[in-house]
Structure formats: structure tokens, C-alpha cells
Amino acid sequence: MYTPILKQFSQPDVVQIDDWRGGLLIRSTNWLGDALMTLPAIYQLRRVLPAGIPFSILCPANLKPMWEACPFVDNVVSMAQKRIVGDEVATVRRLDPGVTLVLPNSFGSALDAYKFKTPYRLGRRGRMRAWLLTHTIKEWPRGENIGVCHQLSYYLELVSMLGEVEYSASCEPMTANPDLAVQLGMDGDAPWLALAPGAAYGPAKQWSPKSFHRVAEEAIQKGWRVVVVGGPGDKNAAEETAKDLKGVLNIAGKTNLAQLISVLAKSDFVLSNDSGSMHLAAALGRPGLAVFGSTDPIATGPVGGSWDLAISEESCRPCFKRTCPRDDAPYACLESITPEHVISRLPFATS
Image (cartoon, rainbow, N blue to C red; front, side, top):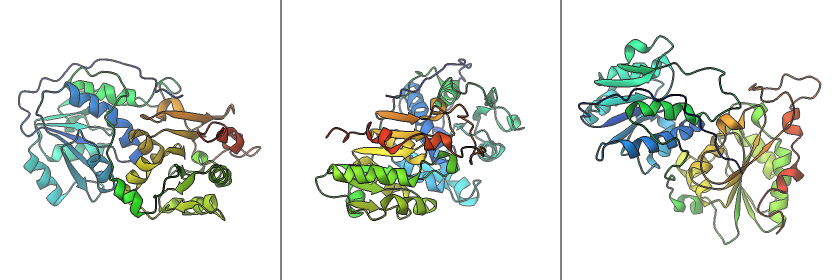
């Protein structure tokens, strides 16, 4: 089973906060998978700060349901655009945070924090943004520690600017509304296998839909129900996965994030690529298996739940390419992982 490897690079000088005002505002990362990998760091930070300090999140609008499902977050302010503007700025000012912690490494995210004139603005240096922040640590290293430690390590280092946190991947699980999954058709007594055949990054992270189809076929034969999930861009892969199979509920492209959270929370097991769905299921504490192609499971593996990984032994991986550059054997890293190999590691393999 997979266990995240965490590495403590440093213990930054803890910033002494004289006035928290209305609490702590955390500027979220922008992508679902990235945001989910920050959760244990935010949770550990919550545990070391003085009791009673409100925790608020500033995030893109599409991530609002995710942060609202976190029981250790008090307020969520969403941004309709790439940058915070107008009434959104006024909403944050009404919260009156004394401290803003910027998780992303972009110039724009630091600019968002600067707009509030928060007395304490914390984040990493780099990308010509240090002047927008009041307290900084070293720039996010690019290309270091590949194959050595999980990306969560960097977020734990960052949040430790506010206290000496525990370097742990443990986190209070997200919550879900089970009624939403039932309304979508997840009823009955049979166990549910969730399949997530898509990946927003590109085809080098996507195991073949034909392979997902073979897994679905086997699961149905063993008495399981199958639900296929994904976003609008995953519809083709989902349709191929579910094609001509009875007992498959294909809801890819038909759910919002709150509904997806409910569906994954109700699933008994999840099979996914390295994707936002994988990270979401793990954050909900669900067990699963993830297929890794071009990316590094040590750096971006699932955090939470009990997960197994199917990783190719091809020497060319991890290459971190969106599409395969090989002409001799395109996507060999994914093609070498057979459906039979994956099926043998699923809970119904011996049932």
C-alpha cells in the first residue's frame, strides 16, 4: 500500500503575529488535485494555532464545494475570475483577516493578498512577487526531489511559517451529502466501484478506456455496481468505458463538484488515473487504486484513505509529458499495465 514520503527541508522562523484581527485567510491553489494535496498541511496548521482563530479560504469558484466540505474551514470566499475583484474584495475585507497565507507560487495570487492590505502576508519568494508579501521563505524549487518526497512536504514547510506543524499526511476527512449520490442513481445494496478514466493533464496520464471497460466487466460479473465519473472533457473516455455494459451508471460530465464528492464518498472502491478524482476520493478517506503513467507517484500520490498504485517499470518514466514523445512504443508506460494486473489487485479479485 502507498504511504506518502514526507521530507522536512527546514523550519522557517515562525512569524510572531501580534494581531490576528478576524483570523487567517488562506489563498488556495487553483487546481483541484493541487488543492487537495494541501489539505493535510492546512489541517496540521489549524491544530497548532491558538484556539478560536477563524480559518477562511479564498479560492476559484469551481473549488468552493471542496473547501466547504472541509470541517476545519470556517469561511469560503470564491473568485468568479482568475483574480479577485469588486464585491469579492469587499467580502474579504469584511472578514478582516490579520494574516493571509498564499499557497500558490504565482505573481497573481500574491497580488490577490496585497489587495486586502492584510498586515501579515506570507508566502514563497520568486516570480518577482516578494514586494507584495511581508514575510517570505525560499522560492518553490523546480525539479528538485523528484522521486524523493511528496509535494505535500513543500506545503508543510510553508505553513510552518505560522507554527511548528507535524510533518504528517493525516487529515480530518472531508464530509459529503449522501443524498446527492442516491439522487443520481447510486442506490441498492450491491457494493459500488467508481471508475475515473479521465485526467485533465493529458493522455500521458490516461490508462486506456478499453482497460477500464475490462475492469468494469469483471466487477459486474462479481456482483458489483459500477459508476463512471469525470468532467465534460472525459465524456468520450467514460462512454467507451461503459459501452454495452449493464449495471454501469455513467455520470461523467453530468455532475457538479458537490455531487462528485457525494458519489465518491458512497463508493466502496475507486479506480482512477493520477487525477483530481483520485485526490478527491483519497481526501474523503475512500480506498482505491491509481494508475500512474508519465507522472511521479512519489511526488503526487493520493493522500488519505488506503491506496494501492499500479506503476509501469518502463525506463522512460516519469517524463511528465502531456503526450508521449516516443515513436517506437507510444504510451508504453500505460500500455504495459494490463487490465488483468489491475483486476488481480482489486477487492473482488478473489470473490
